[in-house]
Length: 69
Image (cartoon, rainbow, N blue to C red; front, top):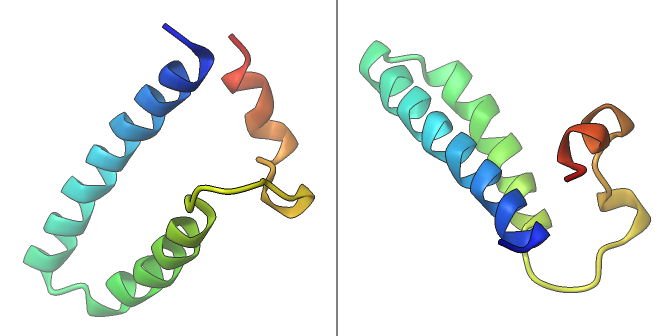
């Protein structure tokens, strides 16, 4: 397994968790929370576009140590 595959697996796991949370927020009618989450997810989707990473797109230092394999 490559490092990219390992990191993708982590992201995929959490994406599934976020999907379940979104479904539950819809069930609860939590529109304000969904609006905030929509904005955050749109920013993440833009960052996920393939291309050259910039300094601004690097993960926060607190998260980097967890991704080292």
